[in-house]
Image (cartoon, rainbow, N blue to C red; front, side, top):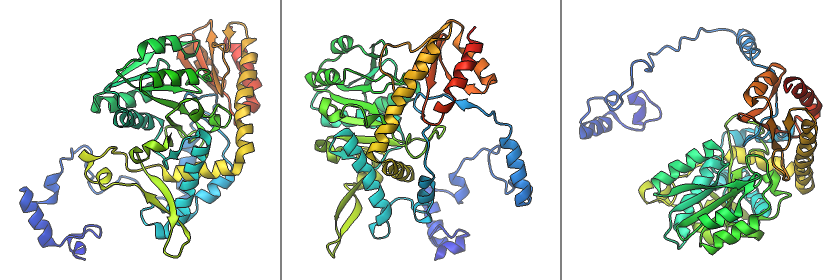
Amino acid sequence: MGGHDTGSPYAPHTPAETAAMLDAVGAEAEADLFDIPDSVRFDGDFGIDARSEQAVRAEIGGLLGDNDALTEFLGRGQYDHYVPSLVDHLADRQEFLSSYTQYQPEVAQGFLQALFEFQSMLVELTGLGVANCSLYDAATALGETATLATRVRETSGSTVLVPDHLQAGKRGVLDNYADGADLTVESYPMEDGAVDTDALAELADEETVLVYAESPTVRGVIEESLAEIGTIAEANDAMFCLGSDPVALSVLEVPADVGVDTVIGDAASLGLGTAYGMGLGMFATREAYLRQVPGRLVGVGEDGSGRRAFTLTLQTREQHIRRERATSNICTNQAWVALRTAIHAASLGPEGLVELARDCITNADSLAAQIDDISGIKAPVHDRHHFREFLARTDQPAPAIVDDLLDRGFAVHAVDDHLLGVCVTDTNAHVKADLVAAMEEVAR
């Protein structure tokens, strides 16, 4: 290939072709097409001295040793569940790690089937007809739902209603989507940690295109009024979207049965644990919206010899190339993370998943009760059922308590001046008593 003549094995252009293209755009060299500040321009030297593997290990070990050894009781969207070693052993096989996007079904049947199983699990958990094989994270899934609503709903409205308690990062992403789609995002009030349905009913009208609710919420509250919220959305011809996660969905009421049109959330609570920002956006919706679903779908059919075969399906060229004509510009996904989630869920099985979810309820309930016995702290703040996490109200300033707990090796959230967020899962439940003892010391 002529690319070798240009010094790059990845650019299949002859010198003559390169010169013709530069001439067409009025540039003398490829470098003229870029404006890279000197301060960040690569000068050919990384400034990293060569050293042995043993020396590198020692340096990295020393660097990581400076990190605080904290036991985290943190939640608010990132949840740490024990990930079986089976997940690492299977997901780290080279055929999975080296697979980018499964465009060629003839060489990617294993990965495609795993993604199909991921979709199937979400369909079972939500009761909805179709799920895609993942998006970036919960925030982008919510943004894509908002734009989907504008395409499939007959209402001429442009208002998206979200809870007051929506996590700030998720709200920010939604606002960005809304700005590009000429949508308006408005908040509706919460009552004792759950949806104030009377206030929502007053706010929802013919201008409402989407109503979004969460269960569990960012405060860990299990929403008890999903059917009523669905009725409000339907009465105003608005789409009803529920935010949740696979673990919670295994014990909560089936979304499709209470009028939910779309379920979104972060599925990385299975297969990934706390990933410090890494997510796995799940998206399931009614089959009527199949051709409007963002992201990728894996379908199943038959090959030329009649055998069952999997392939990416319902993908349009506009989504990948003619972006101005696309219904969605999300054309990639978190395939490898979705694979890990599918493996983790399959290893748990239905009974194991339900048992994990029930532990999320009982552990939160028992820890809240123990913290409530501490003088100067009330927990939980909301008189509701909780899943994984809850709020505790403190007489002392919450940020000061957080700092004091950090000194004792524990991390919790300061949600407000006098509100703490505490999250308990199967990975930290065994040290609940230690956290309680530390809180007793710092809450005085």
